[in-house]
Length: 356
Ligand SMILES: *Cc1c(COP(=O)(O)O)cnc(C)c1O
Image 1 (cartoon, rainbow, N blue to C red):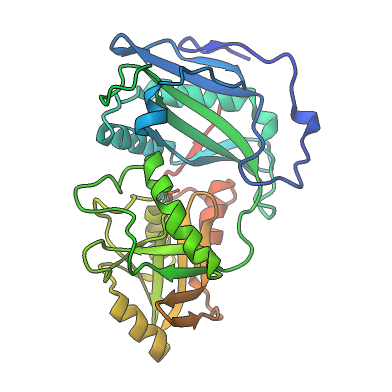
Image 2 (cartoon, helix red, strand yellow; image 1 turned 30 degrees about the vertical axis):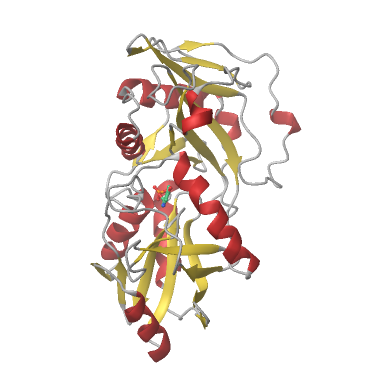
């Protein structure tokens, strides 16, 4: 194996791979043998390293613990039947983590470090990426940045760590998702940081999500913070509605995360001949469509599951159940995207990126 000129690599002497049951994985609980880490100090990113996966030692006053200065990404690597590993649109993740970082006053990372770091890490842990499209076998990749400077003064950190860890996963959801539309809590506001993939955006949704889970739902569909009248996203997924035969999703705004799966769904749906409208969708319109039967499908889009069909939608005391139509859009779009990710279909849009 060639060693990268940019990255210092220390290999593990004790691979854990033989202790892992790859057919019974719990999402995000098992991690591979190595991790990528790069420190920022004295005004610049230092030499990146790949190390055996290990705990971090941080000062208890490190800023990330007190002020939540942290951003992350979520991406996947797939292995085809010939044993080649592929990433899906990794440059989009790189651009997005820097966009998130900028909003949280974190220094932007270096593209070569990111792409080469990923490449070296995945080569080293390649045995952890299992082929198997039907089982949804893949490697979930979690890049993240945390503020590590010691000291509880409320000011941006001068030191950071950019880290990448990887977790083998299988297909995510099997059951259709039950969602409840938010009518009181908000995930994001104008001028806020809802468009950043920031740790704090998740912390803020755990409590309202727990409340809907106590009522039997899985997730909240967030609405605009002013009137709770515009449908926005699901907090880990962007959302789509099929009204009659048109697929509708709301435009990206500063309150909504610009999902890479969302973009890919729009492009792929159009390629499949489906009409897509990117426009605002109101709660009133959705209720009307659910009541008159023109709401035929709804689904969330995100890296973890690609597409998660929504089976139940609730708003206040009203509940609607959706039955999948014969010509199910979500299943067709999901299959078409998975076929690109697993190197089964032609890559018309240049989305695949070979690990080599
Ligand atoms: C990550 C994320 C998504 C989905 O983005 P993908 O790039 O498709 O994985 C949607 N909403 C929020 C809030 C997210 O953090």
